[in-house]
Image (cartoon, rainbow, N blue to C red; front, side, top):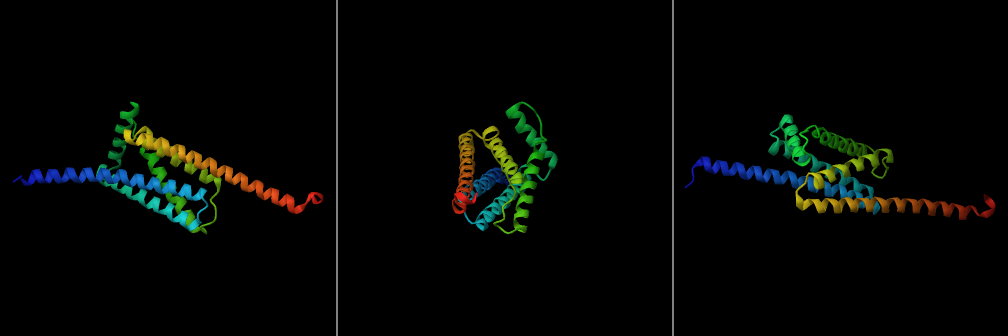
Length: 196
């Protein structure tokens, strides 16, 4: 029979491994919620459904952050900075950990956006001057998390999703332009040629 110390070490290693996997999968689920929100937005799904998915993504992301601080950083900001610096150095050769502040900003912006949405009617659109930079920032972080810093198996997934999001945004832009043109054409038809 193994000694209690060996069993304890094995349990600690199992807990650490499961904790890291939990952190990874929570990030992936939060991203899926964001991508789902984007697709539902283009599909013109009901606003309450989109807001629910958006808020669910935020809650999952906050669980991701909490688990990262618990299992990886041991509730230490300094350890989070050092962990970020090690990852950055491994990929870029530059030992810089202040990127953790970008992640804090990401979380704060998502909280602000979700809180704003819940204080308004669900179908009230948020201003594009806010939403376009916000989602470009989300996409930038996702690209970095998967393609730049992610494991090799996720790089093709990251590139594919970034392309899908780009196509989705393009389709949404064309759909919006076409709706505006049809509305303008309908107005011109209703007013008739002599009413101009």
